[in-house]
Length: 373
Ligand SMILES: C[S@@+](CC[C@H](N)C(=O)[O-])C[C@H]1O[C@@H](n2cnc3c(N)ncnc32)[C@H](O)[C@@H]1O
Image 1 (cartoon, rainbow, N blue to C red):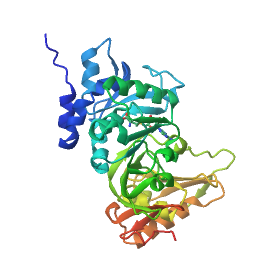
Image 2 (cartoon, rainbow, N blue to C red; image 1 turned 120 degrees about the vertical axis):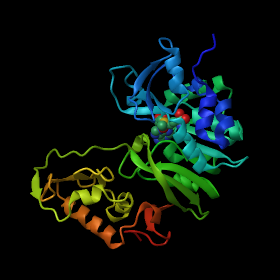
Image 3 (cartoon, helix red, strand yellow; image 1 turned 30 degrees about the vertical axis):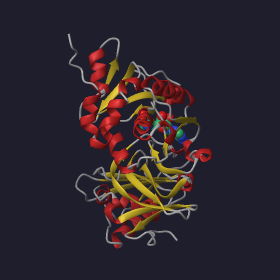
Image 4 (cartoon, rainbow, N blue to C red; image 1 turned 90 degrees about the vertical axis):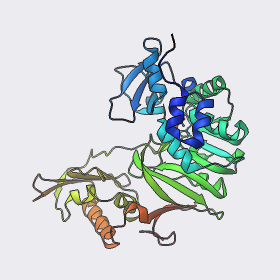
């Protein structure tokens, strides 16, 4: 009897013409563990997949638009039903992999650096398209890297796989024409710019307010800078050294503050607000933006200050609670009003500049920096 369970052709239809051959040549099944947690890109809930117990269900997940979680808590906890931990490695959903590969747009012969090997599937796709010799992939977790090497070998590919901190790039093997980042960053490491050829592209998930972020494409200008724009929303696990540090208010007594601005003005604003705040309120993590909720939280790790502003049901009052030395809610309001004063630019008018000094946000033109010099 022929199984009705799907195969690589199902993914070829998902990823578009440019990557269809690659997904057929690099079957995803070689990269997925026998037991894992599958999270479809649809509204369907996450579910456990077990190849031995339910081979068709396992295959359905592997050959559909599903992110498959393969590690939690950096491997310190076993991935098993009932065990909860911070997601630390996965095989990203094929449509998202394809979206980033389309932004990366490698040409034949391009040398690609991938940051975040994970299962190795994306590195395999790049190898199928460009050849093993053109692909270098860096994974911070040694056990994940070792398993990726096994997976890639099983699929018949052998890109250069480096176990190490991808924040440093792969200087020994630079320069690269393309840098493909598959974990989100809050601060873009300059090493990626420095190791990219003039005119080369860096495609990355940028999450200045952590995890839920923006697709970014930067182009290296050849003088130590890279300049780019935003290409929609995205969500990825963070680069290990840039994981969220949760607010810690211990040691500070709460105090009541007052509000001039309804927090819902901020949570319902264009995502350009969140981007502009990177320039207007450096180092501060502002949570809740873009979700339309009744509250905004702000955390300044440098001073240990935290502020929470909650709008009441009727919008007639806002309860502000602050901790730590900084009057953070006032600073958030000032930054919001500064954004309004710029014309409330949306994400489409904003861009990023990365150079040896760090990352800056610009409005309309790369030399018109927001809140920076
Ligand atoms: C979403 S997964 C990558 C998916 C992968 N590209 C694939 O095709 O399966 C993110 C990976 O980034 C890795 N990672 C996190 N921080 C890193 C760092 N500093 N350097 C290199 N890899 C890192 C994680 O260990 C994890 O395996």
